[in-house]
Image (tube, rainbow, N blue to C red; front, side, top):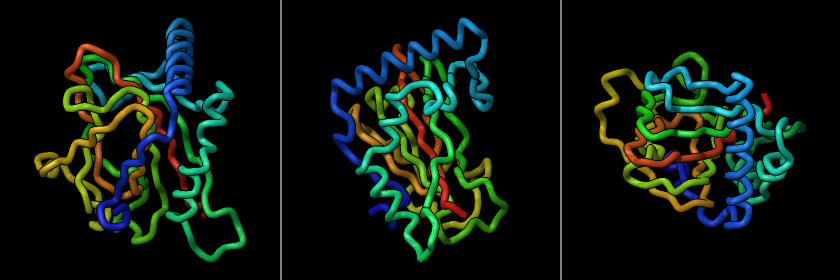
Length: 204
């Protein structure tokens, strides 16, 4: 399914107790960085309602332990499989994404920042850790299935293409190919929507 569509939803990766602790830690860091004026507003959201907490592995053991999840790393081993004497992949970034009520949807984009044509092999793959439910209204990740095969980046006109919204329960993880066309949707709910974004890159 992943090879054909460029994404897959893995359910029940995080249990309820750990979800609660993760959410508490995200807000603890968010309020601390807000107080220090060091928190980041995501620059592509003109509403200023999308907040980022960067470099999570430097800020709490709970995130260092989480990103080493065997199920997720087993998937990355498969994605980046090739003959090499080196590690197949490394962690590229790990951050928390808080979509506050009123946050606007992103533009369609890919997560492989290289010139076109994009490579046929995976240079990047992402893990989207669903901390709050992804539903129809709160900014769920939106994808264009099979777009990872196009080998070029989306243009503004492509924002009108048919988008699939991924509905997911807390504790799930969405794995996306680095060249899949995707975006965060807009949060039209009354509550924050938290996700963690773990990006992996091939070791070359």
